Length: 219
Image 1 (tube, rainbow, N blue to C red):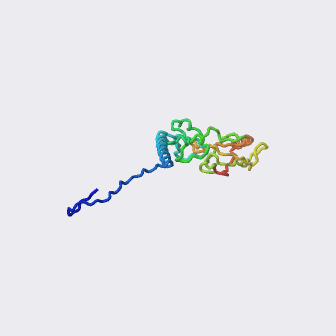
Image 2: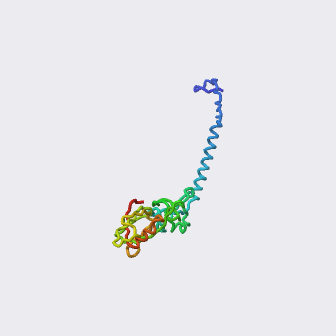
Image 3: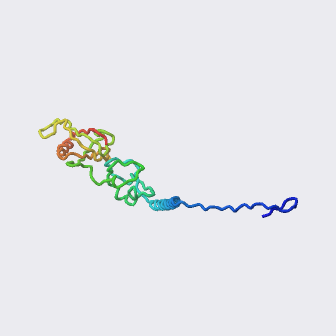
């Protein structure tokens, strides 16, 4: 190759730079495998997101506190939309009628999803127990409201016309509250779980209006 000079005196031979050879980068198999793995994981993540959205459904949640043993009403529950709720096993909103009327097996807290394991048809009676109902005046109730699971003592009061078959004053009978309702006359009806052997004596004392109710342990 020749180059022309500025003064036009001729050309001067100059060396020619050899062409630059660009080496091809070798692709490491490990990096290639990592890239494939990341792509696959990304696809799985997208599929999971789509599946979760498709799993959105209507379920039952607790709207207000429900004590253990209390009968569940429709007002205690609310319908909510939950994505991917199947893994939590909540009760679908369409099964509301199956839940209303059952009792809470555990304390139900507002804002939590309801599951079938939290409700029960079983009465709050233990082995060897029976249920009785006591009609009480408001002043005879040891608390403004007794709740299922509360422990009480039924204490016999003195009888001016005592006979040999009547229980002595001060006799105590342990019982567990199943429920308490307030009729229109503002009296109270107390439903209790009582040992079977104590039922006859307590029924007789209740007929004589010789029972006092003492709260010993709140649920």
